[in-house]
Image (cartoon, rainbow, N blue to C red; front, side, top):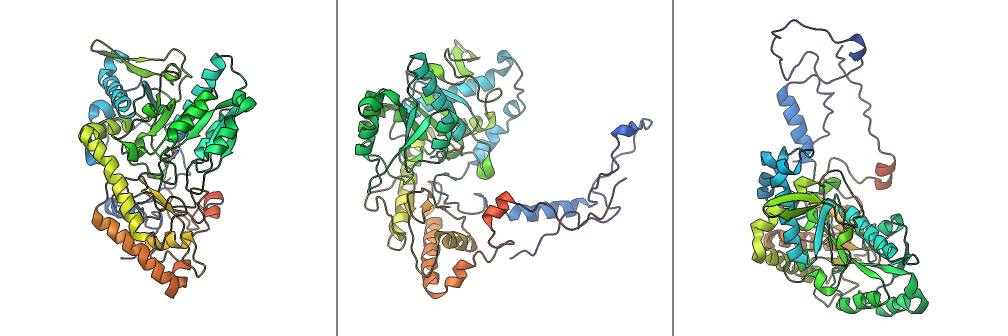
Length: 490
Ligand SMILES: *Cc1c(COP(=O)(O)O)cnc(C)c1O
């Protein structure tokens, strides 16, 4: 059912209506000091049922994993098992006060320690810090660790960071914030890092200014870099370190340990791969793993275990804190619950199923949604298509029309090297029926593009608000209603 415009709660206000009645006080009233009283406070006056209906209606306007399929490439919008929420909601975790001492926080510290151990097993790294509140913050920590490492060796000239042109935008932003200069390494026509360009960037005198490389594998085209060992060896031989952007670890889970390939430091987005609801910008956890060269530089505190006692410790050469206390602890509880729920075998199947699902969707649509890079190779957990449906239909039109079919739009116009990119990541949690419905919608849109292009140009049609000027919505949002509040509470 299409909803009409939803009135503001102020428009539903009726003078004198109340949702709650406070009991008569059993002590004499004591007036507040006059300077603390507000006489300009305007509040809606509504009964409880009106409030419940109002906010339930508003909540239905949201896309969410609990309601719809969310094939948002690079974002890993998988289903978040309810079990995680149960665990994060346990009173001992939820009510833990961060200022309690270590002896009063043994359960929380034990969980942090155990999660660090799990992540070490999954990735092969020597140590982990769970301080970071987002992938980008994990990146920032990792890059500062690389900077500190070179400085400690008196290697002050190493200021250049190499970044593939397929990289996530956070990579160059992070390097710039950390005081590095960035240098782009192009991709080959088959979607791999251009090894010749890399050799050139590491050659001769240039080696002396090389700080390292930030690389994503599988890269954002959803392709595994088959020559990753050569890439890493080239950078190491030139004295640089290798940062792995592990925001989306889905494809490698239980199959490959990044540390075995030679990565020096890497962040994992616990909110993506290890399932925390993270639409709308949070909360997240950017766990940072490091090999033996950089483990001492990790942000602190990390968890330690002596006998049966857990404690917070700061690594000896730590770059410092990223965040107050222990990071986004609720996300850590969810990640730990998720890993323990799946176990070693389950974790491996996550990766296998995520890759299978992406390849299934890709195979079913690639005749009409062609892939400019790696079309003939299996993709990993996601793929980037470059549709050209004719009749002036843009990828934005396709994305908006998918909303009418009940699907969240895929990631669009990223990676930047794919023209009109449409980037799909189905994740392992979707059923074949859901994937088939999504494929059918994409194919129906191909037909519409030929027969009724205006339907696509004008989409979405079934939403309370049609197509927005997205720049203006972000830069000049209209946040005030013209409806005057009806009631004034004195
Ligand atoms: C999501 C993502 C990031 C950034 O993670 P945030 O938690 O949004 O800061 C970095 N790199 C890649 C490849 C990503 O997909």
